[in-house]
Amino acid sequence: MPISLLMGNVRIVRAIPAAGSEPRRLDARRNREAILRVAEDAFRSDGDVVPLDEIARRAGLGRATVYRHFPDRNALGFAVAAQWLADLERGAAAHDADGLTFRDLLHAVMSMQLEHRPLVRLFRELPERQQRRYTEGLLAVLGPAFRRAQEEGSLRADVSIADLPLVFEMLEGALAGGPSTVDRGEATERLLQVLLDGLFSDPATPVRRPAVGEASSF
Image (cartoon, rainbow, N blue to C red; front, side, top):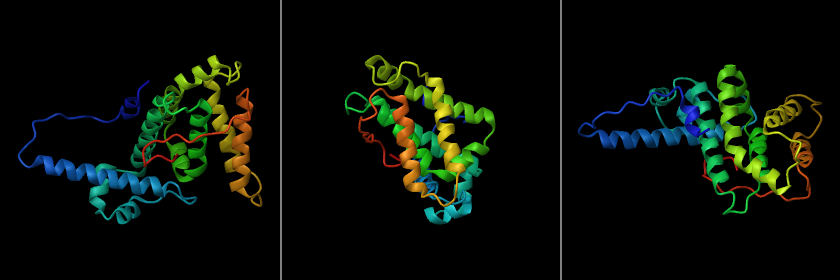
């Protein structure tokens, strides 16, 4: 399932470029990229979802420009997630050339879940259909590396790719609950490693971080 799955609600209009339209398109693309960079950084915080007005201020753009690209925070959050997933797809495609393993890719996904708490909270507010579409896209990206890991024997044979959303939910449950006195930084990293170790036949395998786009959380 390609990344275009995530763009099902986007309508693409083809037209003959008018005179002077090319500079406007370049400006629009630069503005969109600036908004996404700022939003990706904002979604790394441990607080609430940053309002679009604040995104506009940090990007040095007018409110109207931001709202023209992203009419609400859900649209912005979904765009950031789609961009991150596209980066992950590129990392997965470089699986063999860069010596990456399925464990590396899965660690990247779970690290994103740890580091982008406002984005995760926003995602969980989306309609179930949109959540399911993103999850299906994520599993499609991970699928080839997952199957290769099982064929090679590094991933447990009794694990199904359909089990991964449950693994993500287990991590989410630990992040959302538990005693407030626990050092979440160290504890959640240990939990992440425990969850990964439970899936793989060789738990001692070190994790490498995929080298993907700058906007990625890797």
